[in-house]
Length: 134
Image (cartoon, rainbow, N blue to C red; front, side, top):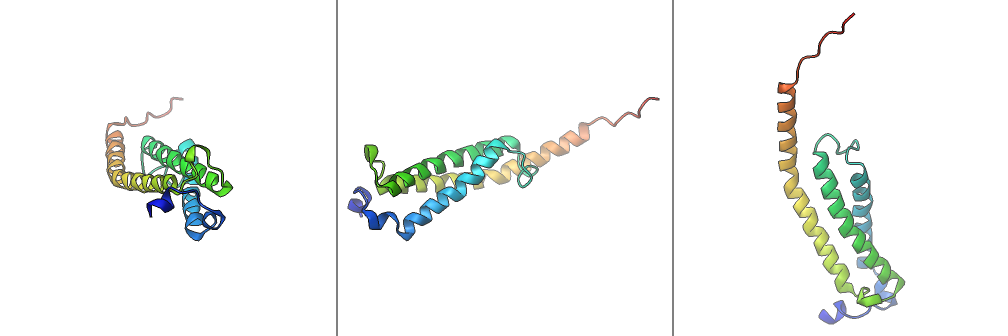
């Protein structure tokens, strides 16, 4: 197994189903992560979590999946600068992505609860609106 991870893949291994699946996962994570990193208040997640949590989480996932896409593209092109086309780098990046997703999933409920507490406190301390003067 170690020899498979540290040797340059041949043409048949590059376009195999596992390689394409990993590339699809990296792209599937990268596109929404890039969107939410730039627009943390978008409709789908905007009101549920804090803007800071969305921006930090999507930036983390975007960087890791972007590096993974870069490594997959190098592998698909069958070039090997600085040994970056070796399968071990793609595997390590994929494992890093899984760890980051688990980390975000663990932190999400606490951020959601903190956001609700902050909104409730904000509603209690808000001054009533004054009637308009005529």
